[in-house]
Image 1 (cartoon, rainbow, N blue to C red):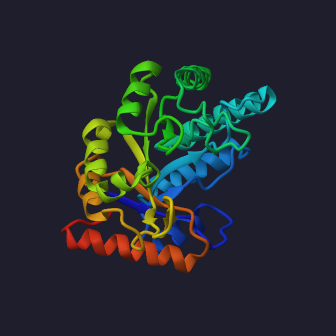
Image 2: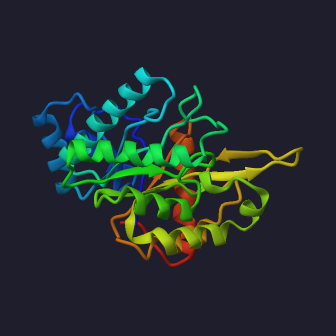
Image 3: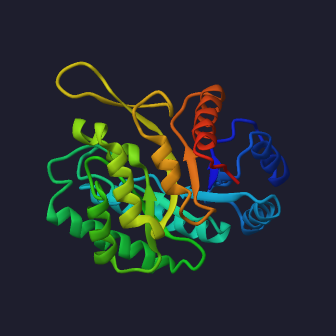
Length: 278
């Protein structure tokens, strides 16, 4: 397993980037460059990652490629293609986006998001992105989400089968799959199901947590790892059975101090289970 998080320290080149990551004890990283970077710069970071034993986990393509607005949809699809190409140049484990949304908000809920028509649109869109880029070193993935496909292990399996592309794989964010009290209290079973059904195709994972609040009707909040109810022991035990380079990437925290607390919790749980990070 590899652990990673954003780097808050400013860096002006590959060596300082690698040094900053190693000083924090991380063996995985988010993309250190933007899609506009020239080939020489991208190659320099890729070479440094290999030399320093750092896995570049993912390139984000955050956008709405199934937007009901045709201009936004076309722009998002273009962004996804560019991001996938960057991931391939870097040798990142994946390029990741969510499927998008039929709402005006790119990641928001909408009554059509879980319809058969939207499922077909997601399939068509992912195929278009992969077929345009023809990646050979990376994979295009969709982050699991609570209100759009893939919203469960089974719906991810359905997408894999329908998209039918070798370079389509899995990005697992189990916190996003906890969308009811039943799944919150039974999240260990949700985790085990995800790894049982998707394990070999998982290329990168996110580290977050979920808290169920004591107010009506149901309030589930994303929180820092260790301050919610996600069963991190089960998560790490399942993750440890995969390719040892699969990264677990901490995200969505406001400060370096919060990331340090999250990393400390995750490492402590790993140590308690007799596990460690590369």
